[in-house]
Image (cartoon, rainbow, N blue to C red; front, top):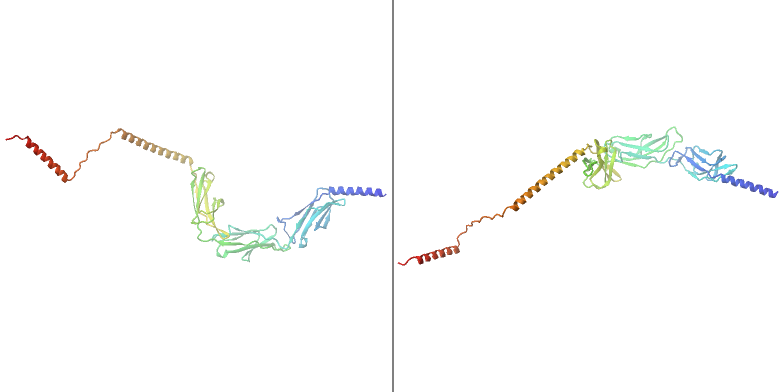
Length: 377
C-alpha cells in the first residue's frame, strides 16, 4: 500500500509539473486614453490578462494579494479611488494549476488632473494691434478650460482657442489655464495649472526690413532674395522668408548680420510674391519685425540674356583686336622711317668782352696784311 501511494503521488506530481510547464506566465495590459497612464478618481480602467493557453481561470492581484478571480481575462475597475493605487499582476490557471504572475503594472490614482498645455500664437512677444490666440489642450473628454490672466479668471472655454484682438498695453501679462470636468459630469475634478506664459508688446522702433532679388550669376536656375534689416549692430538675428501664403519658406537663424541672402529655384518660384522679416532676442522672448513689402520674382529669359552676353563679349573682343592692329601698324611705321636730324638752333647771345677782343684781333690782322701787300712809292 505504501508503495502504491508513493507511485500515485509521483504521478500526480508529474501531472502538476507538466501543467505548470504548460501554464506560462501571462501578460497584463492596461487600457487608458491617457498617453502618460495617469488615472484620476472617478474614472474606469480596464486590465486584460492575455494568455497563450486554454486557461479556465484568471486572477487579478494587487500588491501581491488576490483581488478578483473570474473565468475570463478582462478586468474592469470602476469609479477609481485613491485606494486603488498600487502594483497589479495577474495569473492564469488550468485544472487548479496556476501560472507564475505576470510582470507588474503600476496604477496611480490622482485626485487632480495633470496640467494642460498652453500655447500662444503668433508668439509671446507680439506687435501692437496684432491678434493673439491662446489655446489650451489636454487628452481627456468632457472637460472645460479656464484661462487666467495674472492669476485672475478671465474666461471659460471649450477646446476652441481664445482670441485677443488688436493687442495693446492692457493685454500684457502672465497667462495660465486649467480644466475640469464639465458641469453635470461626476465627479467634478479640477486640474493643476499650466505653466505660465508672459505676453509682451514689441518695441515700436522695430521696423520692417527691405527685400529685393537678383538672378544668381553662378547658376541660372536660381535667384537670390536679399533681406536687409535696418539694424546697425545686430546680435543673434534670425531672418524668415515667407511665400505668397505668408507661410515660412526658408529661415536663417542666429546670425550677426543685418543682411542675408536666400537662394531659391527660379523655375519653381517665378511669378510669386515673397516677404521677409527678422527677429531679435529680447530677454527670453523674440521680437519679430513687421513683415516687409512683397517682392515679385518674374521669369528670366536666360536664352536672351546669354545671347546678349555673347554679343557684348564679341564686341569687346573686336575692339581689343582693332586696338592691337592699330598699335602694330603704328609700331611698323616708326621702325621704317629714318631718324630725323633736328635743325640747328640759332642762339642769340649778348656780346661778351672775349668776343670783342677776337673781333679786334681779326681786324688788325687784316690791316697788316693789306699794308704788306701794297707797293712802295
